[in-house]
Length: 60
Image 1 (cartoon, rainbow, N blue to C red):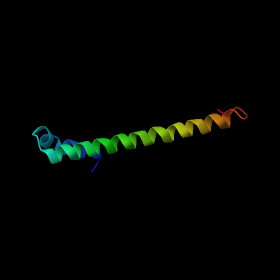
Image 2 (cartoon, one colour):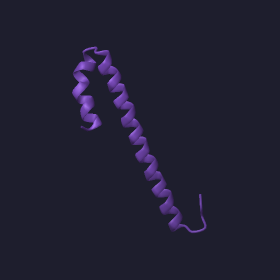
Image 3 (cartoon, rainbow, N blue to C red):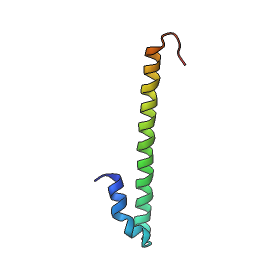
């Protein structure tokens, strides 16, 4: 199950005040943000490498 789908599944419990569901929601949110940040970092590395290939001798 996707992380976002799991968050949606437990949403009624979270809004109902279930403390364990709330903690799980926070954990899932942190993991989603971590994965999103990883993707951005990898893309930035790809762009830097492409720039270096297109601009020999002009490392930044």
